[in-house]
Image 1 (cartoon, rainbow, N blue to C red):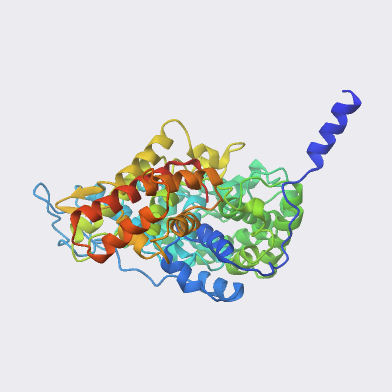
Image 2 (spheres, rainbow, N blue to C red):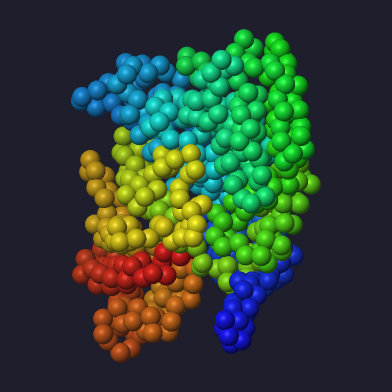
Length: 541
C-alpha cells in the first residue's frame, strides 16, 4: 500500500459517524425536533400528537411519552359467519378463556392479530405500543407455531405488562410464560430428556447475544438447560408450574465466563429457585446490559454502532441500565433526551418497517375505521392494514424465527432489508390505494380523507404554507426547492400565480356542497400527496 492509500485508509477508519454524546440536549426544541422524537416513539405522527406537546419542555414531553397505555379489553369473536359458528363464544364476546374446538384456532389467531393491529392504530401519545413491538421482536414467538391463540394472547399481555418495567423481571417471567415454554419446548425439558432450546436462546438471543465478548460455552448451555428442567404447562388453565419430579437436582457447574459459578442442585419445590440463581449469574455479566442497549439503539436510532457510539452512547447507557437494577425507563429517557438523539445525522436515517409504514400512514392521515360496536368490519378493516404490512414482509405475531425479523439484526444490511424489488412497489401501491379509492368491505370504506386532513392545517388556502406544513408532518427530512416547485405546480395545475389554488380552495370552502368545486380541490390534493408518498423520502423516519 502506498502512502496516499494508507493515509486515505486511516482517514476513513478514524472518522466516526457522529461524536455527539449522551449529554442532555439543550434547546431550541422546535417542531422539527418534536416531530423527530415522535416519529421514533410512535407509529406516525398525528396533528393532534404535535398539538398535545406544544409549549412543553423536553422533560415534560418525555414524562408524557414514556408512559403506559391502560390495559386493553381482550380480543373478541369477530369470525362467526355462514360457514362456522363458535359453539363456546358468541359474536362480540371474548374467546381468550374459552376452550378450542379444533375449528376455530386459525380464526382466533386472525382475531388476535387484528386486535393487536387496532391497538397500534389507536395508540395514545406514548411509547407503549412501540415497546410492545420491540419486545415481540426480542422475545420472538410465532403464533402459527404455538397454534393455540390463548397462549399467544397471554404471552402478548405479558410483553404489554412489562414493556416499560424491569428487564430482569421480564426475563424471569418470559422463561415461565406458557407460550414461550410451548414455543421453545421448555415444557418438554426434563431430567431424563434435556432440551437445550430455550437455554440456548436465553443466552444467545435474549440476554447476552453472540458478540465477541459473550464467551459463554456450549457446556453453559447444557448446564442452564439442566437448571430449567421440570417446568410444565397446563393447556386448560394456560399456566405453567414446576414439577420437582422432572427436575435435575444435581449441581450445575458453569464456565470461567460466569466466574466458575456453581448452582447447587435442590430437591422438591426449592428446585424452582435455581432459576433465580441462573438469572443472577447472567445479569452479573456486563455484556447483558450492553447487548440490550445495542438492540434498543438499533431499533430506535440507527443500525450502525461504530466505536464512538459504543463508547459515548452504548457504554454509558449500559451503566444507567445496571445502576437502575435493569429498569427500562431510565435508559429510554437518557437516550431520547440526549444530544446524540437530536444530532442531525440521526434524523431521517431509518427506513420505516412495514408495520411503521402502514400503521403510521393510517395514523398520520387520521383514517377513520368502523366503530368497535361493528365488530366484524372493525376487525376486518384492521386486518387489511396488518395484511398490507405482512405483504411487505412484516407479519405481526409471526416473525420468521425466534431471532425476530432480520432487519433488526442481520449484518450488514439491517433495515435496508425492508426495501426490495417486491416490497417497494407494494408500499407505493398501498399509498396509491389509500389516497384514492381506499379499501371497501361490506359497504364500509377506509381511505385518506385528504380534504379533511388539509382542512386541519393552519393555512390551507396558501399553497406555499400548505406544502411546508404537509412536508413537516409526513416527512422526516427536508426536500429540495425543486421538489417544492413541482408540488406547487400540481396544486396550481400549471397556472403561474398562487391565487389559482387560493381561489379554488376558498370557492370550495364557501359552499362545500358544490361538487365541481370539491372535485377541483380533491383531484389536486390527491395528486400531490400521491406524489409525496411515492418519493423515497417518505420511506424514512
